[in-house]
Length: 222
Image (spheres, rainbow, N blue to C red):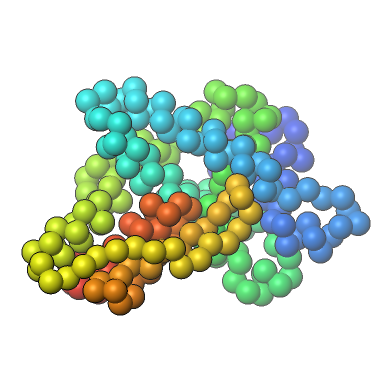
């Protein structure tokens, strides 16, 4: 794993790579799982990314900055970072999670990436944590601005639907899971009151975007 960072307290790294399923199967070892570190890392990631965007894109209004930040710190982006770092090979999973394909599950990889960032912050402070984030975020920002992840799928779909005045478009919450600090939301997209597509994300807004993206793909518009 190429972290470009050497831990003073290696147990922080080990904890960051420990999924709840593994800790639960090894209760006698007094192992800690990575959820608290993930909570911390999520906040550090948001701060460093917001600071980078605010500094480097002075002409972008608040709404655009918010969309751009969401695009570059979403689950998919964090999962890509995890794979680039080799995190899938480092995560400690319980037997059930392992056999169930957990080592490749995007939510587990994204959470472990945030936990790793939280561990770096605790171990070395904000500057090493900032350096870690800035290894990846600038490139993802460039890609997003080039038209990849920065597409506002909801707006694109809304414009298509508005052309046909007989169609109505709405979103509704279909379900949510996970602890309070790591919720996953599923939103359904309804066309003319019928479920047409659904999407999942770390916020209702992200889930709506994923549902709209799926709908556009189904319509051949993505």
